[in-house]
Length: 426
Image 1 (cartoon, rainbow, N blue to C red):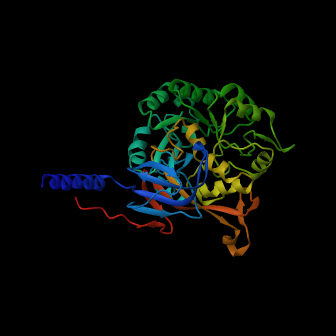
Image 2 (image 1 turned 90 degrees about the vertical axis):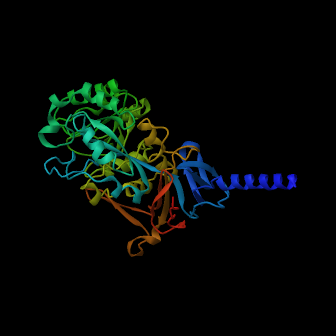
Image 3 (image 1 turned 180 degrees about the vertical axis):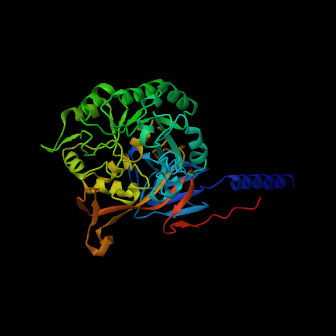
C-alpha cells in the first residue's frame, strides 16, 4: 500500500511539474530566417518564451504553444530598427518637430512595417527631452530611443535651430548621461551657414557623453567640405545621414560630373564613419544612389527620416525604402542587415537587431512580393524620388506580422493560430 501511495504521489508530482513547465508562448513555423548577426539564412523555426527568443532551429515542436504562426513562404527577421525618425509630436503649431505638428506618434507607423525600434533624430534637446520622454517614449509600445539635438530647444524650426548660443555640449552630455538607456547619441540638424561651430559642438557633446553623433549637414553657400567633415571633424562611429542627398546647399558624396564616388568618401567609410540613408523629403536622389551602388558603395544603415511630409511623398515608409535598395541592386540579406544588425551597432545597442537566444523577442515577418502583385499587372513596382526620377523593381517587401517583446502586435492576414490569446481569469 505504501508503495502504491508513493507511486501515485510521484506521478502526481511529475504531472504537476509537466503542467507547470510552460510550453513556448509563440512558435513561428517554416519561415525563411535571415539573422545577419548569427549568420542564419535558411528555413528555420523560431520559438519565443516569456518575451525572449528561446530557440532558433529546424522543426521545433510547437505542441502546447499558445500561438503558432504559419510563416511558410515568408521571411522571418529581427525587428527592424529605423535610426532616423521624428516622433516628438504635439500641438504647439509653431514648433514643427519639437512637440509640434510635423512629427508622428510612433505606434501609428512602426508595427505595420515590421519596425520595433526607432531613434528620434534630434526633435528634442536637453531642455525638452524629459517632456518628450513622458509624452512619447514612455507612452509607446514601440521601443523609442533618442538622439539629443545639440540645440537645447530641439527642432523648433526657424531662428531656434540657428542659435549657436543654445548649442551647449556640457548640458547636452549631462542629459544624455542621465538617461543612458534612452539617449543613444547627439544630433546636428538644419543649421544654415558656413560655420563649423555647430559641428564641433555636437562632436564635443558626443565626446563628453561617450556617444556617437549624427550629422545632418543643413545648408551653406558656399558648401562646407564633406572631406573635412569626414576626415578631420568626425570620429569613427559617427553618422553622416542623408548620404545620398543632392542639393545645391550641400556637397554630395558622388561627383555628378563623373558619376563616381569621391575617393575620400571610401576612405571615410573605411575609417568608420557610418553612412546612413535618412531618406526624408528631399534628402535622397537616385542620381546619387544608383551610381554609388553600382560602384559598390553601399549605405551602412537604411533609415527613413519619417515625418508628416516624407511619409506621404516619395519615401512613404521603411519597407518602401528597403525595397528601393533592392531595386537598385542590394540583395535581401544585405538590406536586412542594414535595417537590423548594422543600426543596432551604430547606436551601440548590440543586444538589439538579432534573433539571438535569450534576447528580447522583437521579430518581423515579411512577404517579398513579386511583380505579379504590381498595379495593373505590369510585372514591376514603380519607385520614384522627389525629383520625379522613376525606376522599376521586380520585388517589394510588405509586413505580415510584427512581434514586440514576444507579443504579436500586428498581424496583417491572421497567420497566427489562434489569432487572439484569451487571458485566463486570475
